Structure formats: structure tokens, C-alpha cells
Image 1: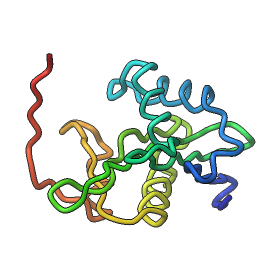
Image 2 (image 1 turned 180 degrees about the vertical axis):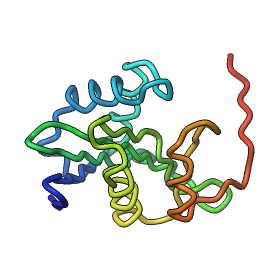
Image 3 (image 1 turned 30 degrees about the vertical axis):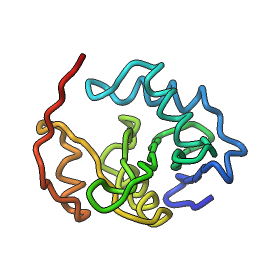
Length: 150
């Protein structure tokens, strides 16, 4: 577990899921994703996928803690593809209001990038202030995304 400014960072993978409290992470993401979040059951599916050791699944979950309380969380899913689709998708990242602007989100994203191989895609809404962080970290906006929701 890495530490920076009294914030400790843990990385959980299918090979190393020990010590991760799933409900704590789910509750944190559900609350702190704010208007950019999804239903709790959808976040739970993403978490299960990231920690699955089934073929074609997997990823990682990163958690930032201060005084044993979660102050940031990130879920990265493997896509099982490469080239035309990036190998990974950063699905969720959230930081507690008390930690915003202190580098916790940047550290979570950097740790995810450092501890995975292949490209990483993410979706961000145009009005999300985190967009500027991703651009500073080298993410580029190559496409517009359209969805057919059924």
C-alpha cells in the first residue's frame, strides 16, 4: 500500500483481492460520483467484473484511504481486446469532497495506469471538471460517443 500526504493507496486485482470491503467501495462510489454516477447495482457489476478471474474479465480496484476512511476509489475493467478497442476502460473514479483538488484523483488514475498494461479508455461528460485532469495526464479525445439505449 503506497502512502502520500497521510493518504494510503491500495490496489486490488483478481490475483490480490484480499482486504477489499466491496460494500464500502460501492457505497463510496454511489455517493461520491454525484451526477456522473450510476445505479448501485451497476457499480456492483463493474466491481465484480474487475475482480473476476474468469477468462476475458478482470481489472483492478484502487482505493485511497485517510484515517481508515475511503476518500477515493477507482474501478478499471479489462476489455479483453486490443488495437481497435483499448485493453482497459476506466469506468469509475470518485474523490471525497474534502480531498478534491489535493491530487487524490490524479494519484488514483496514475497508479491505475502504472499498474496495468495496454491502453486505457474512459468516458467523461463535457461539463465534468475532471476532464482537464485527464487531458493533462495525456488522455486525448479522439471520438464522440453515441449510444443506442434499448
